[in-house]
Each structure stands twice: as structure tokens, then as C-alpha cells.
Amino acid sequence: MDNIIEIKNATYSYTDEGISHIALNNISLSIKKGSFTVILGHNGSGKSTLAKLLNGLNTPSSGDIIVDGMNTRDEEKELEIKRKVGLVFQNPDNQLIASIVEEDVAFGPENLGLEPQKIRECVDEALKSVGMYEFRKSTPHKLSGGQKQRIAIAGIIAMSPDVLVLDEPTAMLDPKGRAEIISTLHFLNKEKNITVVLITHYMEEAENADRVIVMNDGEIINDGKPEDIFQNVKQLKEVGLDVPQTTELLYALKQIGFKVNTKALSIEDTAKEIAKALKL
Amino acid sequence: MLKDITIGQYYEGKSLLHRADPRMKIIWLIALIVLIFLAQNMYALSFAAISVIISLIISRVPLKMYLKNMKTILPILLFTAIINLFYGEGEVLFSIWKISITDGGVYRSVFMALRILLFILISSVLTYTTTPNDLTDAIESLLSPLKFIGLKTAVHTLAMMMTITLRFIPTLIEEAEKIMNAQKARGADLESGGLTKRVKALIPILVPLLISAVRRSYELAAAMECRCYNGGEGKTRMKKMRLSLIDLFLSLACIIIGAGIITLNILF
Image (cartoon, each protein chain N blue to C red):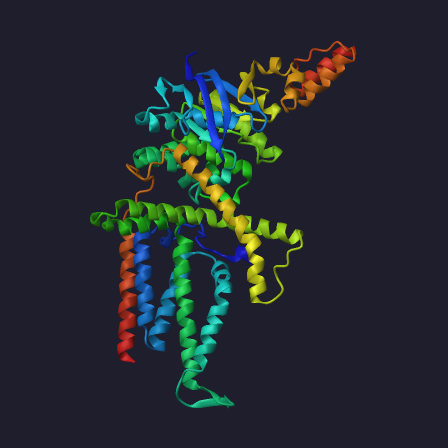
């Protein structure tokens, strides 16, 4: 698989009231086409800053971000990069522009200057792929948080991006809305072949990812498959993250001498592991 | 109370008026408002009233919706009616101290109140049958001749501002209610005291509301940029506005109403 995004020694710093802060410290990373990557980190770990660098909304203080061969510093490629790498934010209320769902989803394609007929197709397809087609005529403020966020995702999908970057899209949602968003993202990744970069601080959202990257203080401190990352319970706790409850349970059991495999993530696998250890 | 505001509240439907071209609807609305103003006597105004009632019926929006709108403007209506009651000449019906109410005053009062009622009703026909976005698109299109005098970006900016305003009205109302509740929970007294006290009590609500609106605007701007917005250059539209037979038919209706009102003005 090719790399769709390459981050080369990116550093991002800003000055606030005369004091300079380093939000990202010399990060190098590449994202494979078609992959589902989760970036985990606590508040202030630099993960949101990273999201804004990926589509050129901000440019790094030093280093480069290369999207499909284009440098985000290249102003001529600005729109092309923004179309290829769609960014979804935390608060759905602040991302929707129009008062009618389908008109909001059409905003992106309209800006790209597509033909009306083509816009219609993009909008319908995007709404269907997030499961909101039947709500196309309703108004966003009457929908739930999860539904609004799915519309925000549809607004990006309608521009047919290659990569979907989401900056804590579930932080303001209830558990039901969160589950809706995560399953939508897996659907888009598998069925529409869209590369997903999900930034979050909820561990359980990383369970089915291809790859998990853990960030702390502007640096990458761990990078690997979810089951391997979660083994490092001590490190995760140190950077203020919670391990999934299942892993924590198995980890505790192992520490008091039970022979369990702490790599089990789902509730069923965990139950099986415990049953095995108890020789049931 | 805040929830009763119905600015830009579209009522989904498929009536003739829903399908009509929004640009034409705006033009008719302006024409009808002028015509209602031109109606000089009760006959002409009743004719206008009948036309307005017919348009309410063909809009197929439940009467309940219109009545809801009436509730908020009732004080203005009553105020106009009462004020006009004292300005009239003719036979004195009864008098208290130096104020006397004449039959002319009663006539005038009913006439003025009816006129305002018709304005509100006909305007809500437009807002109920047209999505806010269609409205702003229509205004953008109607103002497009301004492009030729060098106001190209101004027209687009105005339309964008209106779209965003309409979109954020319900959001900000919700937010204002949340802040009010939060302040009440901290013991703020918003409902008693004189006018100055109540205006002062609003400050702790307006300041956080303003700060949050500014924050929202930063995020919105970033989100718009992420969706390839670059000031409307090369922008296309999903929905093309097109004139149809409905528009011709409704234009004819408009002309008939105009002719009727003017004739009745001259006859009586």
C-alpha cells in the first residue's frame, strides 16, 4: 500500500502572550492508503494541532506535510489538498452552514464548482453512506448530536476525499451517538475505501483500528496494533489515558497470578479468557 | 418565550406556493404589501383579505402555524388598534372626560389592525413555503444586477451572512436559554424589578453569549475553509432556480388582485 500522507519532521509552535509553546515536536509519520488509524492522546498532547496540519489549515513551523505528493505549503495546491483530506471537528453545531440538511451537504461540492446534476449525486450518495438520507429535508437543530455529526461527515464525504481526518468527533456526544459515529467510520473505511484518521481520547474507539498512535506532550510515544498498544497499561495511565475496561480487568487478574492473555479486547474474548483461566 | 420566534421556519410541503420560484415569491410579496398599503377603503381591504386567505389555503400550511405566529405580534396589533381608536372623526359613540371615541375611530382602528394582520400573514406565507436557503439564494439572484456596478463580492457576502444568521438563530437561542438557566441556578433574578434592573440583569447573559458566538465563528470559519470555501469564487448551485407555469399562474393572480384593489379604491 502507498502512503497517502507523509509527515516529515514536523514541528509546530505558537506564541501566546509572549511565551512560545511547542505543540508538536519533530514528528515523522506516514499514513497508509485505505488504513484506519487512531491517534490517542490526552488534552494538550498536540493531537488536534496535528489534525489541522494534515489538510493544510495550518502549516508546520518547520518540516513538511506531503499529501499524495503535494506539499501543504504549496498555495496553488491548497484547494486540491483540502478536497483530498477532509477534516471533521468536535462540535457539529459549529460546522453546519445551512439550515436544511441536503443544502448543507451540498456546500462543499458547490464550492468545488461542480455541475448541479453532479452535486445532487454526490449529496445523495454521501447522505446514504452515513445513513442520513431520509433526513435530507429536515433541519439540523432538530436532530440529535450523533445525527448532526454524521451530517458533518456527509458534508466532507460529498467532496469525495481520499482521507477523512476527525478531531474528537465523539467528544460531545452521548454513548449512542458515539457508537453511531464509530460504526459509520468503519463502514466508510471498508465499503468506500476512505482512509480514516480518528483522533480521540476514548480508548474503546481504537479497538478495531489497524493502527494506534499514542501522543503525549507533542511527541509520539507509541505506535502499533491496538492489542499491542493496550498491553502497555502503565504507560497509558502515565499519560492520562484509560485502558479499555476489559484489558484492565485481565491485567489485574494477571498481576495476581491468573494465566490470562491480556490481548483479548472484546467482551466475549475476555469472558472466554477468564473462563479458560478458571478452567470452567 | 424565546422558542416562539419563528424566523426562517420552513414548513415542509408540496403546494403550488412551495414549488413556485422563490425570486418570484419575493417580488409578489413586495407587490402585495404595496397593494395592501394602497387599499383605501374597507371594500378594497376586504378584497385584499380574501386574496390573503386564499393564499393561506393554497399554501397548505396548517392554520395553527399561522396562529402561532400571530401570538407574538398580538401586542403590536392591540397597540395599533387602541391608538387608532382615538384618532377619528364623526359621530361620538361615547366619551370619558376629554377623550371621546367616534365611529370613525372604530373604523380606523379595525382598518389599521386588519392591515397589519394582512402584512404579517402574507409575509409568513413566504417564510413558511420557502426554505431560508432558497430565500437567500433568491435575494442573491435578485441583487445580482449590482455586480455590474462593482459589488460582486458584496452580494455574495450578504447572502452568505444571511444563510449563516438563519442557521445560527436556533443554536444561539438554545445557548441563551442554557446560560439563563445557569445564571438562575446561581441565584440571578431575571424576572422581577423595574426596567433598568431587568436590563442590567441581561448583561450576565449577553456577555457569555457574545463570547461563545465569537468562539463559534472561529470554528465555523475553519470548517468552511475545510470545505473548500474561498469567498464564492467559481461557486455553483445544487438547485437551479427556474421559472415555471406555476409562476405565470401566480403572477396572473397577483395582477388580478392588484386590479381588484385599485378598481375598488376608485369605485368607493
